[in-house]
Length: 335
Image (cartoon, rainbow, N blue to C red; front, side):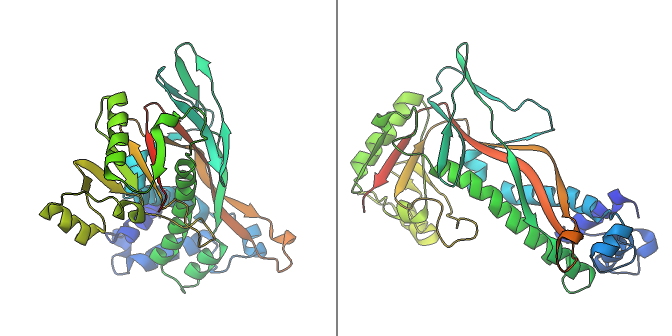
């Protein structure tokens, strides 16, 4: 089978719609796929220094094409990503720049682990920002070995890879947005307030944001924060929303959208604060996510490991930045 046929088969197997070539019609698609990958590895189900030295395997090319597509499919179904993230996929060397008109409020470059690196650049009456990208990866040696040995199926292997990689990407996006505070450079303090939940105060903030932008605002927050947003007058529909969603779908006509919280990768700590309401009225998505170049698999020479095993890491270069060109509001709940 040709590489493009194997990629297509790998994607179809994952989606449960695999059609094998006619010459393999009497075999299960997963077995056809496993055999094709085994053939690429010289017929061996073992990844080690010797087999790798003999066979510069093409399996990596298959994963390098399949995994990014499946990761992106998962992101497209994530409400946070769909509402707040603008994505660009750039070839290596393409211009990495977002430009906004002169109503830009503030720009914060990539935020990682709570560290903000502000950057401003003026071009006439416009503002531009480049998103700093860096290499990110997830180790895949064990999954590949188990699949080729028949101890794990293709979907389980791909789920492990894509889930881990998707979590890493969302971790960066969440951290970027959650870093907005009253101290964020350029953020108008008029639109940052807080205290004990008070419907009138929250609606006043909504009105300020809508008056400044001329657009309809939406409240974004985690479920614990949205649960505190109750109106003095509740309709039957609102009660249904609370029963089904765990919070009221609207606050006096203003839509509320849940940001599903996530653990920081490798910890049990939530990334997103459970005490902040973000009031946004903008057609422009504030988080800029840039993927630069192509994904590839980085190999570590087995001679550097005491057990002579190879190490493989699926890697991609990407970064996140915050760029806001409309006034937004933040209400920090004290209890």
